[in-house]
Image 1 (cartoon, helix red, strand yellow):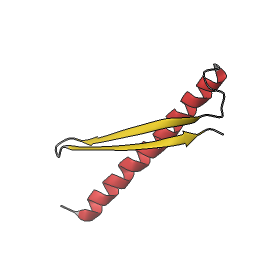
Image 2 (tube, one colour):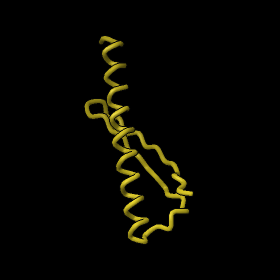
Image 3 (spheres, helix red, strand yellow):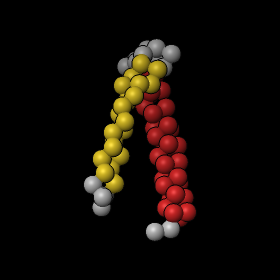
Image 4 (spheres, helix red, strand yellow):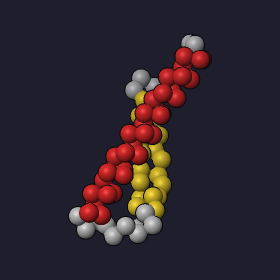
Length: 68
């Protein structure tokens, strides 16, 4: 296994996950505020599940996102 190639691939994947996830969260929250489903001062529970086929990895991260 080439460690440099492996680390570069992981970083590229995680960057894509981070950027696209942030966009989707921002869009969903803005839409919910616009529709009156959220006031904009809540703290939302968040959860991400990462799976990696072939090695049986399932990693969950729980957190909170404060809106105001």
